[in-house]
Image (cartoon, rainbow, N blue to C red):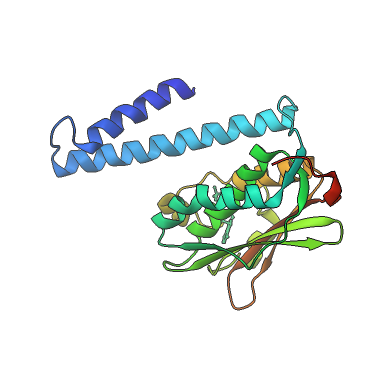
Length: 222
Ligand code: ADP
């Protein structure tokens, strides 16, 4: 499924850059819509294949010990360009403690990316997204805080479900499959943690997840 679609998107991208010659306005609008929707379809296929892989157990998270400082900063670097697209600033809150979690780094960054990209998409332009880390009992709690419009009350119980989206017009405009949070929840639970959200004081939403913390002296890796 992915190979032909990638080739279609690649061809449309080439056309849309204008490298093959100028297009008139109407034609260019159509090829731009085709490229955008091709990309949405590819995102959807990738998320569906991923959820299937997770549910079937064919690709379980492989947890190892990781120092929070490495993946936390890496997530910020990886997601900054996406936040820039929405004119959103992203920052680390305070000076987070160096904790050691037991997790699959690739999956952890996938969860961070999803929460950070949602925070960017649902923030007002110029808004600040803050990423924090703290210790709560024997868990490391990561939070992603935005200053967006919040989660509508009637949508709260469905937010971690598959294909759940509060506002389809916003999604069409900003992209998304409605599968991201369902994938995050499954991954965090498979790594022995939990995920949730709360209203942020002063407006916006704080998404958080907690992962088991390892004894600092057991730290061996990155
Ligand atoms: P999507 O690909 O649509 O972002 P998700 O599963 O990640 O899918 O999110 C599901 C829905 O939850 C979003 O479409 C949006 O309606 C809502 N949502 C997620 N994160 C936020 C947020 N930080 N602020 C407001 N609404 C959010």
